[in-house]
Length: 88
Image (cartoon, rainbow, N blue to C red; front, side, top):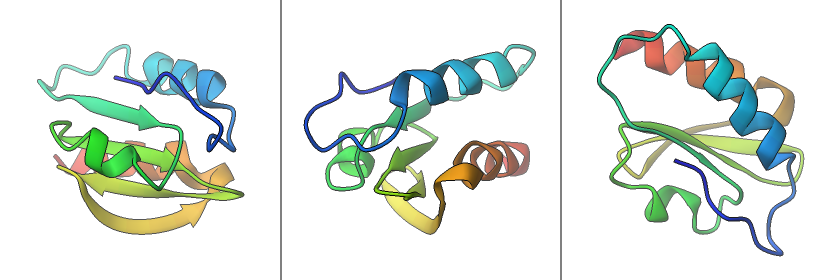
């Protein structure tokens, strides 16, 4: 799942969502993954997702079931997400 974007989006949401989709192509886990555009509403709006990321201004959050796990630099967002998915 991905958000429709709004004025708070400060990341290349479409590019990141496409990268996540590509990297998950062979994933056999039955999980919901969220890629959200802002740290303000993203984790809460995607609380039904098993794992997800929300972009900020140069950084972003990794969250699980709506609860923030940690903050990472924007360039590490997708890698951090993949690391968390491996743990599931």
